[in-house]
Image (cartoon, rainbow, N blue to C red; front, side, top):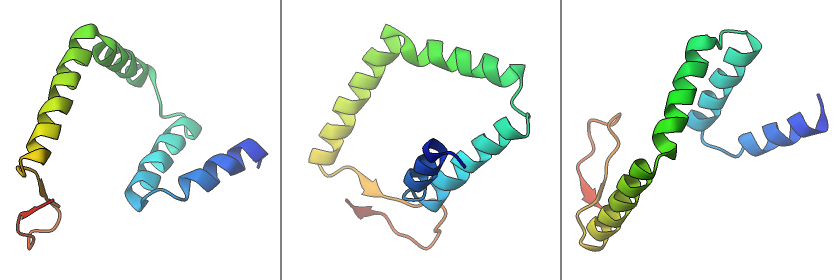
Length: 90
């Protein structure tokens, strides 16, 4: 294993299990050569979408709204995988 790859794995190991699994799936898709032209097309479309001025303006607006909602106490922790949880203020 190269030093660069070892460093990458060291950093990845500090992430959550869910994030580590997502990275592992992406790496395996590349190594197993299951990443195909359709994925490249999707990625290019995504890059165009999130790179547009309109998207940046919308994201800026959403950030301001979320910050306002947090200040006003309108945001709650919620884990959809835990059906026993009740909404509680952050």
